[in-house]
Length: 98
Image (tube, rainbow, N blue to C red; front, side, top):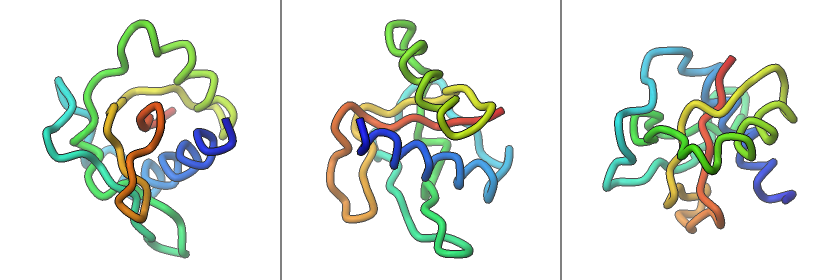
């Protein structure tokens, strides 16, 4: 659970850095999103457009995690999202937005 929250915090940073410049697509990309170190040493997703929609059975869980970092909800999901070291994030990664 701690690991998932850390990933969501990174996703929130990505939203604040990239805004709406790139939104999740219609399906997860074959090249998964990866966390990077961005402005102010915040973790950000390298390409939010790699996320697909949140599956219906994961929406409530994703929303709950996103609400843990502010008034946000899960708007994207990638089952093979990678951490900043290129390792698979267990359970995938969520892209959070207001």
